[in-house]
Length: 390
Image 1: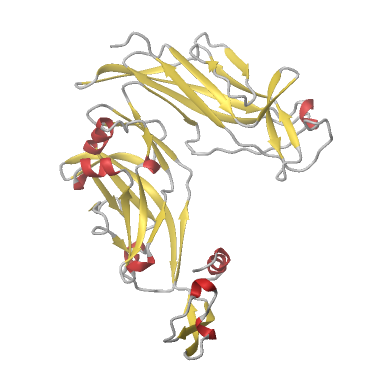
Image 2: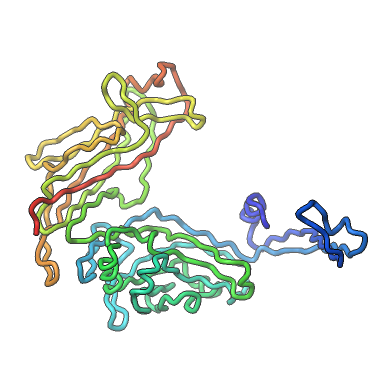
């Protein structure tokens, strides 16, 4: 068993560095009761061994979290359509199989020249129903986006030596895979719930599995009736920081809202959730110090351009209340295909702003002066409704 502090020690060591440990072991023929606190070293007969072992740090693998987000709309036949800004994905044909290829893992590998073919890396499908429904060619992976291996458990892999030639892992998803997502009711999902990657040491399989998630994420949406929201910088978890003061700018977050259906949605609503409290009848977002002793109110609002080209502002705070944005300015893109008929993909933009220049934020909730750092995190949700659609 290795402690977290020991792993931290290893992480901080340079590739090629050495460190030594004294390894102690004990052997005895006496059948002692370890659960009662008895130990091998305390028995009347036995052997104690001590050996100095020197280890060399031969490699360091770092996974890079790109925080990138791609959006894919699929019809009932599994044909994918990429959303705006999905630069890490593109249409791909492997042999006669159509689908999407996406750069899913970014990594940096440093070595001291170590050669190793017993350490294997491969994708693992996390959903058993999906795994049994698809064919071997429906999900493939690659280190260069050109040469592909079919996903097949521990039988299909890249070795440690293979990883040296690249800094990315690509994954191919076939239209048949997407079609089965629809059949299984999984068409409104995210990639991190469908699969992950695993390391396996074939030389010492008893060491177990080492799982890691992808560097980015794919949101998968049904083209026939869906709604989504994502950051306009296409990141998974956007963040901002600033200072409080009379001339301080707002902390602004831009978002893209998409609806897709046979007709335009009859109603679209949006809400902000997070630490919140009402002050004098108005909702505020609450930012707190690391120790939780200082809690500061910040006003916040949503804004968007309406269909009349007017700017609409809604004081929201972070109070988990739905607000109507049906009257936003929507830009429509028609779609049609043989399986789902015709429909429209509508897009609008919305901004969430936390005000840094409001005098109320100069005092804490309990009306004390404050200084230092405070922070908060929250989420933005959207929902859409269609009426009388066959």
